[in-house]
Structures are given as structure tokens and as C-alpha cells.
Image (cartoon, rainbow, N blue to C red):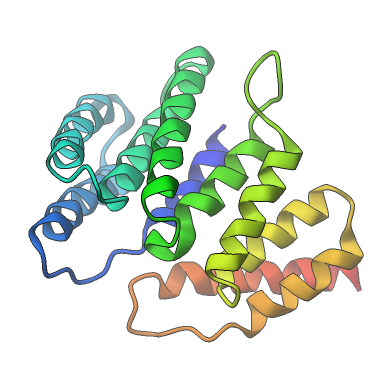
Length: 210
């Protein structure tokens, strides 16, 4: 579960400069969430995350037609799952999944299709029935939708390639790894370091196939 949460954490952290009230609220809560995730001791994180979940819930209520608050709330719940027991963690993951589904209906392109990518990751990382909802076909469907939204992105290409590799479809993964490696990055964007790491992982995966 921790590996899954770490992946999702990196995926969501694409904070930008915002200009409208909704985005400003999301950015403020997101900054607190990141600081708590990175710096706060585990025993103190639970109450801090609960407060952040309440804060972003208020933003969700205030801006029901926007995907971004739903995406951030799902990220907070997924991070909370890292410190929870397996049973509680699975419940949090299921709640996050429901939020992501709502975000996708509202705007699948929000945050470069991150909700679609994360849904794909959840579907192929969590256990299948009867334990959870894991489903490789659903995972691939979401990851392919993410590629439609962001066909040249590092994240969308890398995680679909990772999925293909886990399915043993190495030959199919090569082209997506190459697209992830060749993607153009903006050094000024706050996600630059994260996507640079994803490119490095794509290079390593490709090297392993050679």
C-alpha cells in the first residue's frame, strides 16, 4: 500500500500559481498537505490530515462543478491510508476512488488528466475481488483515456508503460517509454523534479528491456 500511496502522492503534486478563489483555496490546502506529508511525524499526521480533509470538503461543497477540489481530497485520503491499518486504508482508497470518478465526470482533463491516471493506478495496484476492486481491464481503460487527454505527457506515458510491463507486454511498452523519455519539460513548473524522476524511471525500464 505504501508504494501505491507514494506513487499517487507524486502524481498529484503539480501545484501551480492560481488566480481565482477556488484555485487559491486548493493551493493553500495543497501546500499544507504537502508539508504535512513530507515533514510531520507519523503520530501527529492523522489529526492534521483529518483537518485538511475537512477543509477541502468545504471547498468541494462551495465549488461543486470543479474537479480540482475533488482530486485534492482524494489525494489527502490516499495519503491518510499510508498510516492506517489495512482495513481502514482500503476504505480510504475506496472513498478516494469515488471522488476521482466524480472529478472525471466533471473534467477529465483537470491537472493534465491526473484523476484518470490515478484511477488506472488504483485499479491495477489494489487487490481484486473479493478483497478490493482491482481490475486490469478497467486500469487499462483509464490509462488509455489519460493518454487521450495528455498524449505527450511524461506521466500518462510512463504509467501506461509501467502497466504494460506488469502485464508482460514489454514490446508494447517500449513506444510509451520512449514518449515519456522524449517529453518536453518546463524547468519552471513545480512538477519538473517529479517528472524528471519519471523520465529517469522510464530510461531505467527501457534499459532493462535491452
